Length: 253
Ligand SMILES: [Zn+2]
Image (cartoon, rainbow, N blue to C red; front, side, top):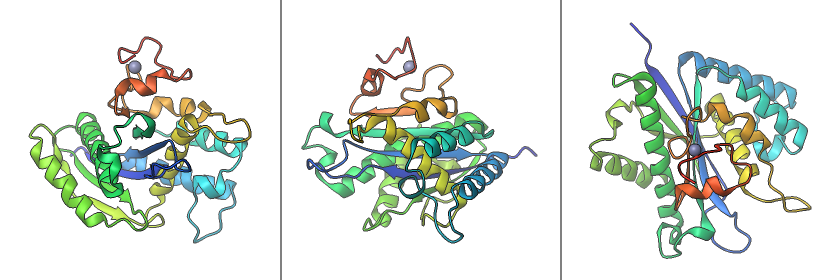
C-alpha cells in the first residue's frame, strides 16, 4: 500500500505587537514532509547542527545560531535540495491591516494567522497525497500563549468550511521546540521569510537571497506561489510588490 502519511511543522516569525518597536510582520512558516522527506529533513537539521556546533540538548534556532550571512546562506542551500518536503508561508503586513481587525488582540491575531496557515497546509497535503492521506500537524508552542483555545478555534473554523479536507488530520498539536528535530527546520524557514521582509542591520536592508534559494520548495512555486504557498495579508498582492519577488508575470500583481 502506498504511504500517504504527512507531517507538518509550523513556527512563527515576528511578534504580534503593533507598537513602534514591534516587528513589521507576523507570520508562520510550515514545512510539510512525507516519510522520506521527514528523514531527509532530520538528516539536514542534524548536519546543520554539527556545522554550527550546536551543543547536544540545545535547540538550533535562526536567532541563536545563524547570525551571519555565511551561516544563513549555508542553511538555505542545505535545506533547498531536500526531496520530499514542501513549504507554505502566511504572513500579515501590520502596517496594511485595519487596526480594528484581528490585529487588535494578540490571541486573536495568532489564531487568525494560524488558521490561514492550517488551511494552506491542509490543501497542500490533500493535493500532494490525495484524499486518503494522513496528516499530523505540529505547531510550535508559543510562550505565554494558551494553545487550547487556538486548537478549538482551528477545529471549529475547519468544520465550518465544508470544502476543507480537515478529515485527513490525525493529531493537531502544539509541541515544544525541542520535541521534534523537524521543528528546527521550520524555525529556519521562518528566518528566511523574515530576512526578506523585515529591514534590519546598519542600513535597514532586507535580504531575500535565502528565500529565493529555497523558492522551489514553496508550494506551487513552479507556476505561482501566491497565495497557496506564500500568502500575504491583508492582500495577496502585498508580497508581489517587493523588488525581489521572483514571479515575473504574477497574476496577483
Ligand atoms: Zn505569482
